[in-house]
Image (cartoon, rainbow, N blue to C red; front, side, top):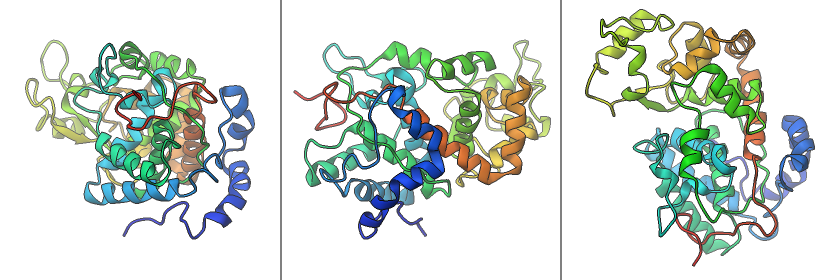
Length: 342
């Protein structure tokens, strides 16, 4: 059974009355600092111009996730990969055209970023309801929240009002998005450059409680450079042995593995429990326990307290969603998310 939509049409009026209250209860520090972080985003932005937008998004996302459970993680990931490049501006959705080189060609996105057809379907439905009103960047933000809720995770009030970029940044996508083999300090630096802190890093890494990773993303943990077959000493050896059966030293690069082997389709805190058992799939996951005491303490807290994880995740998602948004007259509202307006 699908989860209930966060904001249905029948409850829209009531929900609007409680939005500000919820904002202060769930993400008060973020809401209070929103203006200084980059733009006048606020939940009721489409209250009059497109009041059914969240209902439309929920309907399409729910259908897509019901058809393919893996899609929830893919849609959540798109929002991450959008915001970490030039800000939350819908740049990740653009196809290559003319002099524009798509971010879809970058190492973090090539052969792995997906869900674009779902965004296309949402955009088409929203355009039919209220043409040239809702940005693709805002659709990504709402979609990420709905994908989280549909897999059992927390809900949050999504500040809205982003506009869409007119270009993309292949280099930004290659260098700004944290990579599976980055060191702890490199990943933390990438977060800090976007105005995010250690708590945001550990909380947002919890999105790996759903989704998959390819063999090529973690093979180096299974086989050392000398080729003697010994696993990374921060990886549970029994778990490594299981992984090697489907991820050989060569070949099988695209074979998919659950990021959270315990509850791969449920948004919960088992990801952190896995890390404490040295069963984090990616190096970038396991280093949260092995390379920094403060991050390890947070991992322990989240592993023990699912509600705390949900609270911090919701706060960090709102904070991430406010990275350098285009507002006012900057950017545009795209008719089609894959290309700038003619």
